[in-house]
Length: 329
Image (cartoon, rainbow, N blue to C red; front, side):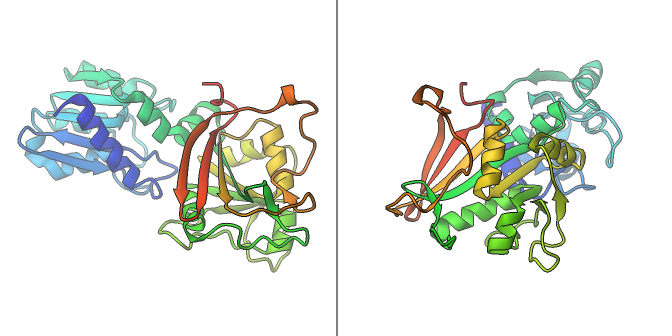
């Protein structure tokens, strides 16, 4: 098995546990034992990490094997024993790592422990793919803030609701299912108090399998709202991110409404924009816009990004844009 093939298989295994491991990173590991390949992925918090899962499944076959793992094995005691020690004890000959872990508890110590034990270590295989897969975890460990996904649904002429405020449903079933997948991947979902009063959303995961995210309201939600119990916050969006990051939120899904969307966009706090476009037209200027607030004054000041993906979901389009940090990359 080539290094690239082994790492890509580990990436696939990590993707399969994306909605279950947070606040731990979603990591995949593969042992190439010669005649067979044995894989594992990180289990929910408190459970074994990917390396331990693969080693347990391999048993004595791990002796002399090569391990492919998306993130540097840990070298400290947390909820589970150090993975680097387990790799050494199993007699693994070589370890191929996607990226180094920026967590201060790891940060190269796992690689050092492996090398000191005589294990051949290679770092950087499929690094770009692993960085993209683990982007929320990496941002949180590097900045203390969550990865922010702004989700919007609109007609083709950029309207999110009719003049009377009605908005259900602009998009079809496939787009709504994908939006629930985003919820399942997120540790918290945030809306403004105005949206709670107008739409009374529950903000739970219903159309896919996964955990319900922590519900966050900017402002005060009515006591009887379906979003309750919710964390109610106020103030500068950056301070809100600091608070949520301190609570262990790796990914925050911002769902609206237009004023909240504008606040996070204008402050340059969005890492990914996910916009669902329906083949429908409002046909006028009186319907509700994507953003409510002051925009650019002149065409030269347009906020420009780059398309990361454009996908058809049923009759709708799913457009993903890079956020402030990656839009010029």
